[in-house]
Image: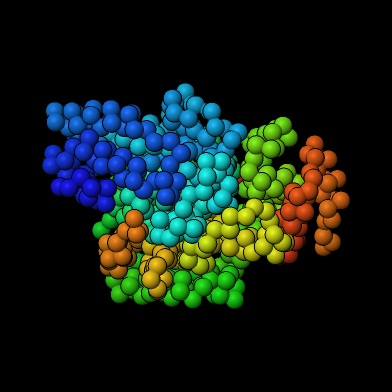
Length: 476
Length: 63
């Protein structure tokens, strides 16, 4: 195999070649490092590339496999890690000047678990400062969308989306507070799942908002996403909020059989008048629903009126929680924040306690309404974003109250499941027309801790629609 | 509800030991007023009697 072709293979394809010893982990890591050298300067997806360490680990993996010690589908696979997740001996910056020299002395549980499977950490991925929702705030420069330079790659796991889509790593980890796994997956044409809150340990992950933060994979296919999730899911005594419930075999759950499955399309998020969804996004999601119906699913509409408040409720809570993590930084070193982060953190500092309390009450009602819907439906469908990836505004500042209010409204799409803690996955469901196609995305949510069903519905759709592969890779 | 002025924002900032100046001052006012207005418009019957719970999900909701 030509080494230049290696980075374009899915994890499942790479794993087969590695297991059969047709290629070695050293071949794979060298191919990815070459591609990072060629492409990363244009995208700025990595903050730190671990060239020597990755090559050393690849050599060890090659030797282990040659000696009959193949560990499974991630053995020798290069993975990128969002720079919010601790890596022992390797700086973890949160894309902020305030953390530019922070070097953790231990791996986050998710990183340790990945290493146990034989995965090779290729580097630390760019993000927005402290995982905020603004794409231009990284102290290490803006990350670009590989589908079109200048477009928003999706926040806050910007590098996880851009690097995975541009084949600079085989799969990646992001962190989803208000949609930061699903947003980059959507904008970069990938599969990304926010697991149930409590499914994956957050030990060793810098917090954004304690009651929302969830670690999840961003991958090029649903099956790769399932493989990556398998490695990180499960109870961790170091994270008291992980639930001690069994972790199913996610890959085995990918049967593609959705016959008889009850699928609800969330009415409010499909209505341009209510939540501002664009026609191309709406049509692509309806097209996906038709495909699922053709596969035997029973599709109908469901109304969740409280969807329309989920954005403002989520932002009220996350804005308050973010600042409460390190309030002294804003007082002592305000100049070290990006301007937009500083404005957001100052705003969060001033939210009245009664408003925060009201938001917590509203959150309980939103959750109740969503859980009620899952008595009738197995999964819920809706767009991940209201529109295709937009052009990034590189000028700093909040321009008007209307702009701020629109951002809250846009948060309804991903904020809903951030509030409720249900698993939610974004998968590519088409592209815009024109010379420079941009990805469109479908969001599939499931019952708490039922990632298997969510992944299987996404897999069934992905296989039937042939989205992956047909549209190829970004133009790099 | 009445919008908070820049002077109000400055005073609220002082109360939490933050010295908020321009250009942040006006932008914090935009952001905070958008949030407060959005939250003020939430009027769900029975909201006041709801117990605000953290994220922990009810046992019965686990698949």
